[in-house]
Image 1: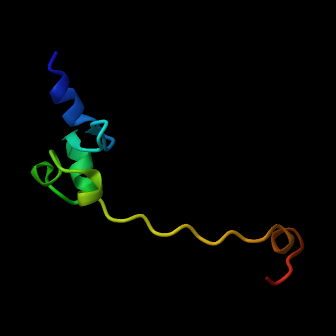
Image 2: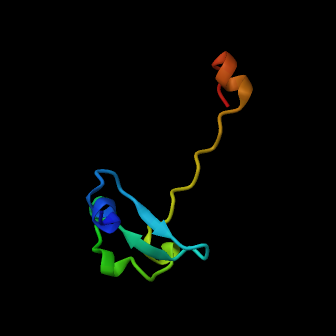
Length: 71
């Protein structure tokens, strides 16, 4: 059985990432999700190739959440 072919045909996006956060392999579903071909990903650090995460929203204070008060 060719495990690399199985990996490539998985219907979910999968990436193998090294301990130092470098893409080692991605499957076709990951290429579609990332909108980049694997040759632009493999061998590169994830922070060079993935868009920045949006900032976390400001949490709603408990009083406002529980009582509907404006904050």
